[in-house]
Image 1 (tube, rainbow, N blue to C red):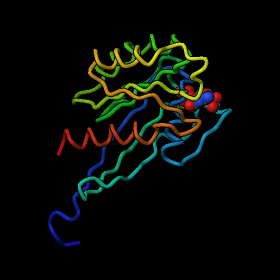
Image 2: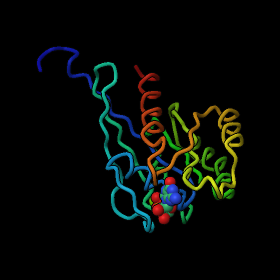
Image 3: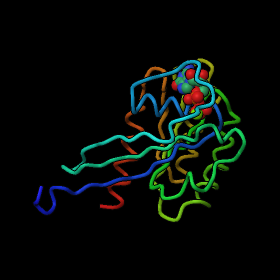
Length: 177
Ligand code: GDP
Ligand code: MG
């Protein structure tokens, strides 16, 4: 269109970080393609998926990056973080060690980002509530003290997955618009 503001568009890079096997790749495939893989091995291949949302009548594109398994070798590179406006920082509610790693992931994010990053702490595998190892209160309290949004999700049964991603995207939009 030739009109001035009709074509306004936003493109935001968002990264997903957290220990190996917490469900990062499945959160993304659930959100972007409504797919889940019970036997997913280390993800190889797709670097990012793009999702488009409409906010305030504007087209907002989120380019969401997945680590492709580098986190197993503690080798997530600065290129991965570069230019990101948002982050999902993920742990597995059934494995305390993945919750204990969160502060390290937040430090790494801080080291590699040059702008304010909208962050949400995500406790994944909520469908495994019966073998939970980290309480909701602990998650909430960490999120509060670090100034993060917080949500528990299940990539398996879809609980809160769209909510978590959309929340980050809207927060970024609010920060820049
Ligand atoms: P990543 O290494 O963080 O990318 O984790 P993946 O997405 O590859 O998932 C690791 C394993 O956890 C796979 O066997 C998944 O099927 C499983 N998984 C991921 N999300 C969930 C979930 O929400 N609930 C359950 N029960 N399993 C999940
Ligand atoms: Mg993965």
